[in-house]
Length: 437
Ligand SMILES: Cc1cc2nc3c(=O)[nH]c(=O)nc-3n(C[C@H](O)[C@H](O)[C@H](O)COP(=O)(O)O)c2cc1C
Image (cartoon, rainbow, N blue to C red; front, side, top):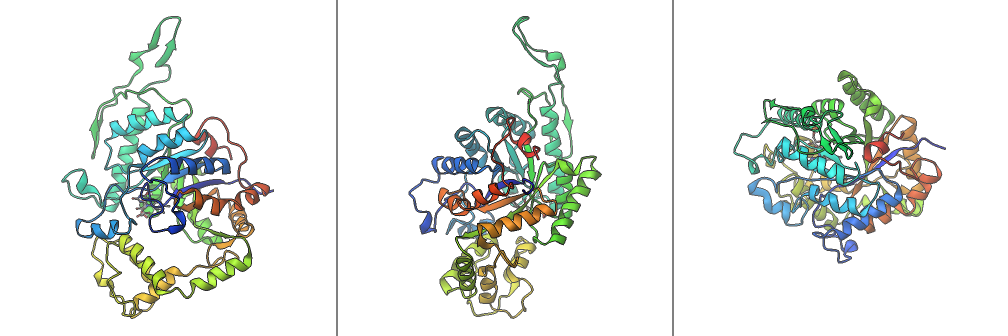
């Protein structure tokens, strides 16, 4: 038997028009209503997953490129995942639900109170995926947009302010003593006066303290500053890194060093590596999919160009597929990492077709060139990750029952038989389950 690991699902396109542009998902669900997500959440809980994380961006992006975001619904619209969370809690008993939150969007006192309320309502199953994207700044004030590291500084101040408010009720402040008729001892509530660089507010918080831990803090940033944030603050770090032994071990060591530097223990942070597997019923089917992906037709390339146009806020669909891609078309606001992922290390004169074809290409799990393979092959990969000390895996996709069943139906029994995936949850909520092993 292998070591058990933690499993998360990442709703990668956020709380948006699920199924749009994918005829296979056309089950007539209304994406603005909770049913499709509740159905998926129950399936995920039945599978034994620890948590679902809901991606988000509060903004439709730069005013000049909004059409690229909404035309095929790749980058918007997105409704607020924090408000979807209660519906998912209601549909499940153990699953952790982790909406993405941006410190720009919620003042610390409001955030502390709303998160506390959800933590109580859910039986301590709330998590918060804290992101520092600054592209949405103009929606919240006319202040200048923060730089990359400053946004992390603000996030740390925001979170420590929220935590101070959560602790503004000392132990023993909440009595609920029927005999004496005293509900709470007001002298044990802290004033919590915060005057910081980015925020100023007073406490104490008008919400009662937690019995089973704070909401779990999740972080996805992979830069040095991002990993520093994780070391200081996170219960879960989302890792996007090559799944080779050296890179997995190095990534984990960096997060652990960052935790130790802040006086925390490495085991306080569960690191989940993000993977988007394509599970097939046979090795032959996997081979066929990989072979076909090497020669994508023009319609497949156009579909990729649409998604890239949304992510890169630059219209690639109007360019000639057979002309070299001039990267000076990307404005300064476009992430250099995203451009790098598009162009790779191909020649400067490489036509757009070459870049899109490289993105279309999938690989087999067996030779570690990609994630197409059978449930057993995928379980072999997870097992190997476990031997390198890995804590868990974040599967990536939409949150539609069709997608969940396609990915999980064969995988769950295999992972269970090998002892990698839990069969039961502990009582006590998300933190308890995350720290169970
Ligand atoms: C698995 C994963 C999930 C992410 N989810 C979000 C998200 O929901 N919203 C968002 O604005 N950014 C999201 N990001 C982007 C990160 O917040 C961050 O901007 C990016 O990783 C760059 O951060 P860094 O400069 O510290 O590496 C995600 C990144 C990863 C790897």
